[in-house]
Length: 155
Image (cartoon, rainbow, N blue to C red; front, side, top):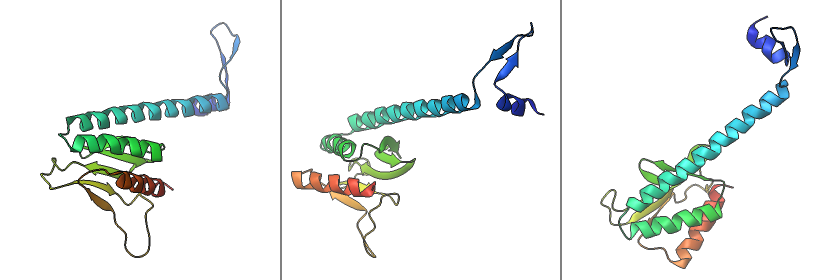
């Protein structure tokens, strides 16, 4: 039997003096591996948020203010989304796939900023639906619409 299978099969081992030592069971090892994955995911989420906040801080006005507000709306509307940068833009992912993003007008020397959704967003409605929106400013009405769209996108 290979050492790997032997280790997985038995949680007992023998020391040099012949004493049997009770180690972790297979279930305990599996639980520890799961916890390690959870901690890594939490660390990555924190790193992603830091990167997004740094990118937002680098933006000139009025894009910076819009991006800060969008970040707050997205976090409140869909706390399961993970912030991360995507092509140097603030983006929000579910299961590693980008759901929505903010594109600064300044980045591409455009007339307006863009808030968009990728195909991971659950926004399908009929044969045609919008996937990005031009933003000149965030009004209360626009904020409510964005919050509702983000909630729908992750549903």
